[in-house]
Image 1: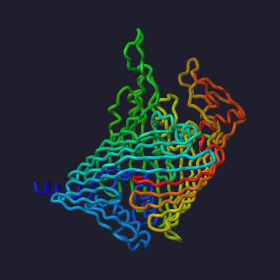
Image 2 (image 1 turned 90 degrees about the horizontal axis):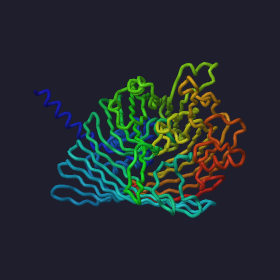
Image 3 (image 1 turned 45 degrees about the vertical axis):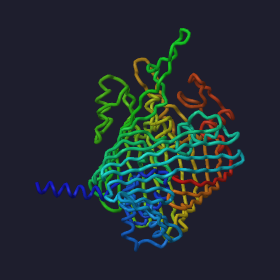
Image 4 (image 1 turned 135 degrees about the vertical axis):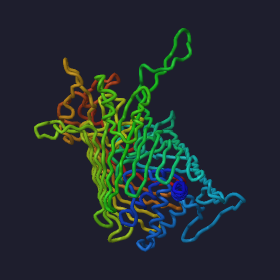
Amino acid sequence: MRGWLVLAILSFHFSISYAQRIPEAIEYTEVYDFIEELTTDGVISSNAAIKPYTRDAIARMLAEAQSKDSLLNKRQKADLQFYMQDYALEQDTLPTYYSYGHRHVTQWITKVSNLSLADPSLHILTKDKIFKMRLRPILGMDLSYNKRGLLMHRVYGAEIQMDIAHHLSIWGSIRDNSWSGQGIDGSKITKPGFLNNIPGVQYKEANYGGDFSDSRGGLSLYMWWGSIGVQRERIQWGDAQHASNILSAHNPAVPMVTLQLTPCKWFQFDYFHAWLPSNVIDSTYYYSEREKEGVTGREYRPANKFMAANMFTFMPIKYIQFSFGNSIVYAERNVQAAYFIPIAFFKSLDHLLTKGLGSENQNSQAFATITVRPTDHLRLYGSFFLDEFKFSRLKPSNPEHNPVSYLVGFNWSGWPVKGLALRGEFMRSYIACYTHSIKVLDFTSNSYNMGHYMGDNAQSIFVQLSYRLTRSLRLMLDYTCDTKYRAYDYVRAYIAGQRNTTTPIIAQKPFSEKIWRNDVVNFRAVYEVFNNCYAHVDFTYNNARAFAPSSERILGEDRGWNADGTSMELAGDELKNYYLNKYTPVYLQGANFTFSCGLSFGF
């Protein structure tokens, strides 16, 4: 009995030490970059394969850096003090406004709680520290100008975060967005077909431009060793600086049930089951409208679509970290209970559930990522995404290629100059990666690819030089070269006596004829005036152009489609224009010099 009492006391103690399991949005790039700098310099350790980090995890990493302040220079210490203020509630304290080396306290003390107004958030901490709350406004505007005109993006909303009794976290936010501009195709610079790294959205009806809202939030029950919750957030799996090829957070946030286990420092387990918007109509599922003049209308509903995924992360020694996992995208009428088993090989379960019926399997994937830090200031990483695999395709005599994707990258930081970082990333995805012969089973959500934004049969090169000049001021110069090669839909041919015969698509030579390319050179200066308040200036040159392949079209190749799904077989300039309009927003077509600036609260 005494042993159980000791265990309960220890559990309670650790639950206080590891409080507020609230995810920090990936869009808060500056704190993530600072953590990346400290990790590459060897000051702290972090699990870059799973993002977003929780706020308590970030607070712990900052506290670890604070305990090793002898390894930090003057600018890093100022950055550390600055970010520690933003995570004060996670340390059971209230923040004080910090600027230019001075602290300004705006606090009210009551009988039951302390209140702090800073940055300009409202923070509440009860005397017994049982209840914590943060309320923050969201407001921002960005302006972009090039030869095609002026584009304006505005956002407003609010965010609330609460922690109750050291075991329950609740959070929510709403951001109302709009893009507007004259003569630039409704101001839509992101949509499922476009090949850019701008986060995907689901637009509402708006004649003046692109209007959308983004509501996120969740609930998490936690102890020191893990948490379980339900949430709607963007997630990224796979170590990457520019864009991950596993889960890139390119698609709009989706609702999901989550599980995270962190029983020790060298192991972490993550699992989620998500509900994905399919954007595919189910012709057997519809609502009947009220009868009018003897006619009953039908409103067809989208097909159900779900996803389950897990990731095991091991950190056996300080300088090596590797993760592996698998996932499945499935489209049944209802959720499948088998896919709620967190530690499972989903393809095996899929065979059990569908193979005996002689029906098409669901869409399963496997993936892995590894990070190595051979010396301080250098971090090497790579990710591998396996959509489908057969050993027979590795033989030189077999013309078919496995639909896989791989990514490699490096980060050289802090030497010979503190704050200076050089990063590079290279990605390639083979033909038919992320796609499926059944459209509803594609590796997509809201029609956005959940893997790398370039999709299949594509290549991406990214290089960045960045420098943290002073506290919260970062200068970046980067170059991106994105190339798309011949485009295919993963179709199957039905031949008499043979079922689901694969067409010659995966036997085509990958990366052979380019149909689209975009080169981007961008200089960006961003300054975090105070926590979560950004001012930025960007100067960007891009050159997006398309090409017409000279080879013969094969079955399933995209060279233009009619509304009924039949091939148009465009050629020459017509085909170039088709690819350019499909993959590039009007605002960024051709060669452009674009100037952008903006200010935002709550990023």
